[in-house]
Length: 249
Image (cartoon, rainbow, N blue to C red):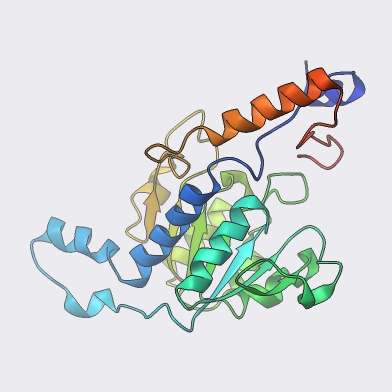
């Protein structure tokens, strides 16, 4: 059965979106930011060549810099909160702007815009965290134009889906030096094959096999949501996180 067929049927599907392991994923985003901001990727290069290139590390201070959270949902909110605690200014985008403007923002955020504000927010951001859902609207959202809009030396962290990023445009931004680095817990076709060799071997990338949601003693939140929805279903009450097939999540 295709997903579109499910929408036409009486089958109700729910997810743990916003209630899963959002905090471990947010910590992964911080790890990716630190990895490139402090030049830790250079340590592996130095070890392989048996000599230190001190100037290549060029460590950056995080406090006072700006991070753009693309997709301010459950994960994005935790990313913003943790980044703000480190002294970063936090801006972001989501499908719809807050109804009450900037008087009703999640903790840590100074501004949230809609899709039309993405490039303007990328232009002021030192770090970019991709946390949005993969939908027809977000597929290849981070394309060549988006990379061109980013600050020179920006760092990209993607914990969402690989298909949200145009990997050819990403490689161009890395090879040209426009991006300082990219931490990717996802990549295009991750369930079928290993990353493209040019991407995996690039010293400006850190690629992991979709492990950002893992953590010791922190794996039951999705099960809690399932059990809560099961009780609600049996009681005839509304369910949480029912998938809207037209919206895509």
